[in-house]
Amino acid sequence: MPETMDGVTTPRGAWSAAGAVAGVAGLAISHAATMVLTLRSSPLVAVAELIIQHVPGGLAERAIKVLGSNDKPFLVVVIFLIMMLFAMWAGRLAEHSWWKPILVWVGMGAVGLLAVLTRFDATALDYLPVTAGVVTWIVALSFLTEPLHHADAEDDTQSDGKSRRSFLIRSGVLGVAGIGVGIFGQNFGAKRRHVEETRRLLNLPVTDPKSPRGTMVDVPDMPSWKTPTGEFYKIHTAVVVPTIEPQDWSLRIHGKVDREITLTYQELVDRPLIQRWITLNCVSNPVGGPLIGNAWWSGVLLADLLEEAGVSGDADAILQTSHDGWTCGTPLDMVTDRQRHAMLAIAMNGEPLPIDHGFPVRTLVPGLYGYVSACKWVVDIEVTKFEDFEAYWTDKGWSEKGPVKIASRIDVPENGDDVETGTVRIGGHAWAQHTGISGVEVAINGGEWTRVDIGSSPNTDTWVQWKTEVDLEEGDHTVLVRAVGSDGETQTGVERDTRPDGATGWHQIEISAS
Ligand SMILES: Nc1nc2c(c(=O)[nH]1)N[C@H]1C(S)=C(S)[C@@H](COP(=O)(O)O)O[C@H]1N2
Ligand SMILES: [Mo]
Image (cartoon, rainbow, N blue to C red; front, top):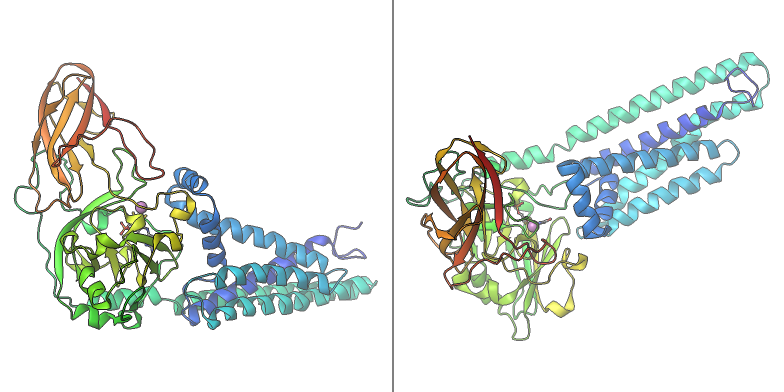
């Protein structure tokens, strides 16, 4: 078979290229349509989210370990490349058939549609970007392959050259147009910037205190008791985080209630606000890990709202749904208990919630891991029963209830550090949420457990800092820590994985003194 354009038939590469250019053009159109309609995620991203939702938890965790926070962009790129393969295949099929490539395009469109429509917040509008993309694919491919068919049909070299030029010009025009439309859509979709602007202009009646006196221990390089917002860990499954204008936000409280409530942002902000120091924990935090933070949160007591709604006696859970479709189930008694201070938070450390932490409104339930309680971008709360639903993570083998386990961590020095011989200051954090910490114990080189100093805490829902000074001779040393709760419970040394309901075991570091 001849391999050049000047031969009798057109090389397969040209057909593939036509498919690829058409593929890019279609994706660009669907992306632009998504942005112009200010829908949350383009079909490609929706497919990525659908995959993330359906991969087994263990696999997802391994991917996150290998790829770090690049796992999502990586997935999007992989899906893009796979689509390009299909697009090139469609291009090649166009050589001998007009309907086979259409089948490929429609098949790809169907996957996109499925991903888009299984989203919680899908509306009729969500059909549009996928449809626009598929139509673009079909039209663009026939536009591009027309000169190729022409070249195949002619057998004199002169008109062959014309067809080739025509094909290249058409590819160029379409490629540039596609990229132009994509960029236009991207700029048009500067929605996040706009929401960021609205957020910055909000003037909420909240305060921003420093770490209270006595909470910080005096150890050089210890992190602050109050976690700065920019250093607060972030965990979410959304590939593109929801950007919600406060005036577009509302929360529906329904299900097993006497009176359904729908609340606007203004109505929420106008209610009495409570402000608390609360530590937030991720169930995936390994022993000694970083997925925990402590902040000053302002919000509305959830117990008040649920009382107004009037929850019925046989309910035992609330099913919370985020704008991005993520769900979690929370024990009802924890959110109706006023002493627990479960809240719909609107501010973190004195500022409106950052977009990535759930703007405009998220839930916080002190004493529960985030995956069963701390719904970001919360838009729907259904009062229900645990036996009647599966939530996002409980569907993947994580425990239905997620009370935070008593734990402790060594922050300074870090594992593997070299320290000077003599007096070494050691410090860290300990927490037993909603119970409180009564003591922290440290063991050096497998020796006796010794009580160390602990800082104060304004309530039992925050962590405490601890510190001690030890004399270390030259050589390698191990440091172990464990916490004791106000209920007398000593943190267990039994090592358990984060799955299904949080890691246990003592944090140990090895340091060397010289
Ligand atoms: N919408 C939504 N809310 C969510 C999650 C999520 O994936 N999507 N993750 C939860 C988990 S597992 C944790 S630990 C906390 C983390 O909150 P942060 O990102 O503000 O630290 O949010 C919770 N709320
Ligand atoms: Mo989490």
